[in-house]
Length: 346
Figure 1 (tube, one colour):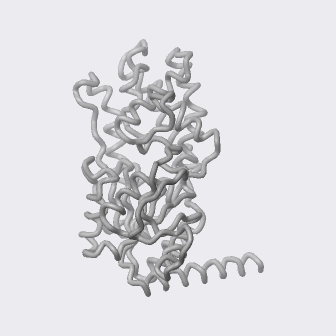
Figure 2 (cartoon, helix red, strand yellow):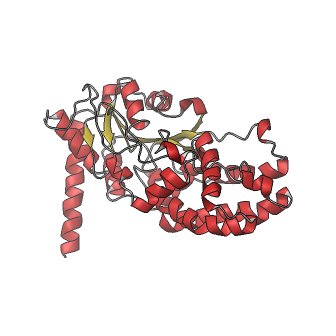
Figure 3 (cartoon, one colour):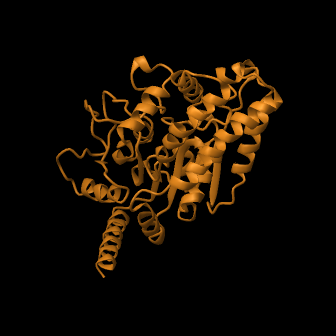
């Protein structure tokens, strides 16, 4: 009984938020995926903690920190923790006493299988995401996903969590193959190519699914502008953009001139997670947290203009209403001048 009352109250709150957004003529909600709708780190970090020591034994490498930094070096180079040829481009491949096929069978395939198992087991939506998306969908307010994840992984995560049926379009990045300087053979590239092809063909319910060139990587505004064009939106002030990265998502909103809500809840991670991401997988850990999308503890000198710092996905719309009604305090208006901050973000 109490559970039903709680669910009803939550539904009513979400409905009121949506009605307020519609009243203020917001025509498009654009959202990041990882760290905003679902916690990527909740499966990536446990998978690495479990599998890296196992992989080290197979390779015969005793220095786990070096192994992690090598992986981090490749991941940082391509701007993603799921670059399909991460292992093939590390020193581990060169030190491996065996053929490309043996490396694939003994190291590469088990690595990705472990990551996929942990994704299937642990990837879940943040609280209130589905209810909020459903309410926006029912109200006729389109939502698009604008992500820097590889497109083949963006569609997999969206379909696993079921948000693809409530999101009009998915805009994510192409996957770059290693160039000739990497010295990889077709045998080295085979597993990654197959993985990208299979995942990219995942059945989905998006009306639009676009693979964008790397030039559209955030904080470039090109991805959001592409989504706006597809949706017939010409006025950026009618767009609400939300994401967990102050540098990348906030940068997009600032460049386009849309409203921005910082999903700060996406940066609230356990200390052990931050150590692995910002230190162990940082190719230059001595320099501190990475300023790229790679780290999570980067502290920008200024905040981008924003209407809110949200503690949950559903709260994004409530904060938007407050900002539209002229609330004061720490909530900035869309035209606010960036000011100094020590807020944790990336």
